[in-house]
Length: 246
Image 1 (cartoon, rainbow, N blue to C red):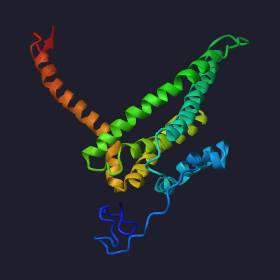
Image 2: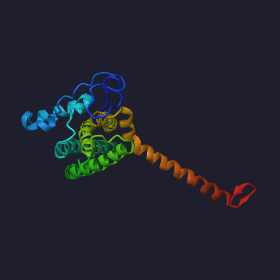
Image 3: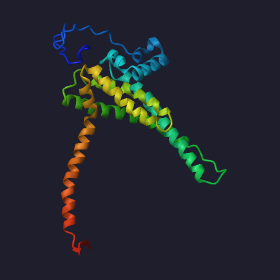
Image 4: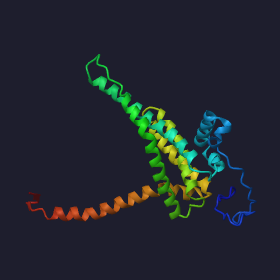
């Protein structure tokens, strides 16, 4: 839990009345709700668009209200919908722009066949790809949270944050730069979502999201540091004539 006044972490148990840091009264948490998980009452389209709008435009408020329990099925289906659409848009733009380049290179009057089989393959395989990506990504992210002491609400909370952040894939509908915008905004949503869902500071949430990248950079740096002496040693052993290697 994070104090809304001083933004510092406070213990959940026992339930605090006042913040131990700034002394402000702790307001009780409002009831948790998510439009997508109320689609039987709201309707499929309304719940889908309301969840997308809330997670993209007001992620802090959305994830503050999001239930951290209730099963993995609903958030997973939501992620599959937008993840599949995002992949299909990506393929469509690749086919269209690739066709334009091919038409420019070919003689005038030559037509390029639209590869609908690519779209069919993506439509069939992308749900499986999204499912695998979410479980692996959530597992790695939750492990990072455990390493920094930020796994306050359990794996399901992390899984739900990752799943509902997949709404950012809708930006893939924008040609050329849509995929990049979506990827960046998805990271932002994950950071805000982890902060609100687990009740941790923004610094811890940011560190958890970027910890895999930091770890990879460290491994690359260590590998390069080990490789440089080997290269220098190999170059030093090459025979030379008047300063030139032979």
